[in-house]
Amino acid sequence: MKRTKISRLFDPGLLGSEVSVKGWVRTRRGNKHVQFVALNDGSTIRNMQIVFDMSQFTDEQLKPITTGASIHVTGLLVESMGKGQTCEVQARTLEVYGTADPDTYPLQKKGHTLEFLREKAHLRPRTNTFGAILRVRSALAFAIHSFFNERGFTYLHTPLITASDCEGAGAMFQVTTLDLNDIPRNDDGKVDYSSDFFGKPTALTVSGQLEGELGATALGEIYTFGPTFRAENSNTPRHLSEFWMIEPEMAFYDITDNMELAEDFVKYCITYALDHCRDDIDFLAQMYDKDLVERLQFVVHNDFVRLTYTEGVDILLKSGKKFEFPVYWGADLQSEHERYLVEEHFRKPVILTDYPKEIKAFYMKQNEDGRTVRAMDVLFPKIGEIIGGSQREESLEKLSARIAELGIPEKDVWWYLDTRRFGSVPHSGFGLGFERLVLFVTGMSNIRDVIPFP
Ligand code: 4AD
Ligand code: MG
Image 1 (tube, rainbow, N blue to C red):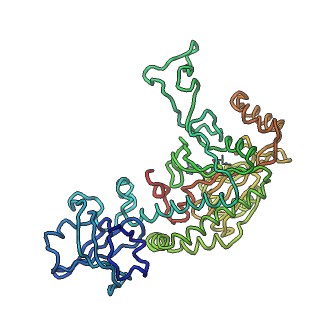
Image 2: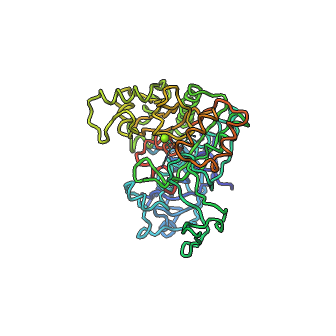
Image 3: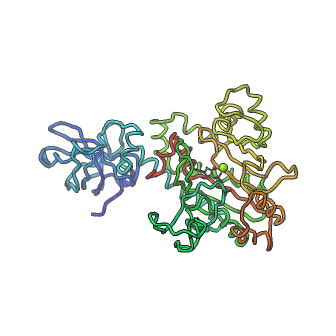
């Protein structure tokens, strides 16, 4: 008999049929007449109750069925009299695949803290919490592809090993095959990269955007979705050194088109999760964050507030609130400032635009005022910045001048400048931090808990 996943077994059409279930034991309880096993196979947050009539099984047979053991049961699927489940399986046969010694298996049934589970990252996918998070994460990844696919975007694969530092922040992980104990040097004492694997310094990508722009100025609308690496201080609940980013890049979009796309995009993903992962989201809400569902629905049903950085700074200055980091025009906003605007002032997601050029990357479109650039950050409750993007500078002259001003060697970006040299167009794009979206949708508060292996 073929195995049926537990998620399917709750389909009322299967009641009264003989089924085969396989999974991991969550708990076993009962008495000498009847034993109940809660079985989970990862297909749903819901456990299937397996009922063992002890006139047909021996204590010896059931002894290996402890928390964490894996078993295969066949039996009749019937309506359940018990509280909390609609159906159950009356066991007819039992096969134990693998035992889990109660003295050494770390995930006993009592609730563990998230800190404890971070130390047991290799086993935590077997808990209810991480099962739920990982299913939501997977559904969101699917939603992302379907959003862009429905709109005719091309999925572009950008390199992970690269010689370009897109954000110019210098927070890159170097990739080398040089022998670190015996580094070849030039006459001037500098590292001789000519004998390195690529013949020059390379690193893991911090963003696929620049290559994304090559795609957008050929294919029109593209998106990337892949791993991203940053060697920045990631000792915060919102930063990872390895995370996933989605970067759409669109020819012929100005910043308003860009903001509209960003808003539609996150609303689509959240709606998808609410429609397809409701059991998991309800479970996470009940365990960690009572207001989760309300917050998700609120974001889906309300327009995001749009204002400029300058207006935002004014509000912060007038708030009378004491912040840890000082607020002044030109300061890079910290998460406390972003969250004040979103959670206390507007009580809505906010899109801040037109930041000072000094705190943003070289490629952003310069405004007439000479001080600001056409940047846009989307700020979310509990998260702060979830999206960063901009309209791009399409003028070769202005972009070259900015590059020179920042001291970026033209030999590193000539290929990028070719998009402006030949058939340049107004265009825009943004980057969504995937884990920040998963954080928001699951209501978790530490980013380490929404990536399988932080
Ligand atoms: O704001 P960032 O640095 O923007 C870029 O990389 C642009 N190239 C995007 C673009 O316009 N195509 O990063 C974009 C988003 C942030 O808003 C944040 O959500 C996420 O990526 N992010 C991180 N997420 C987790 N850990 C980190 N260390 C992150 N750094 C950025
Ligand atoms: Mg940013």
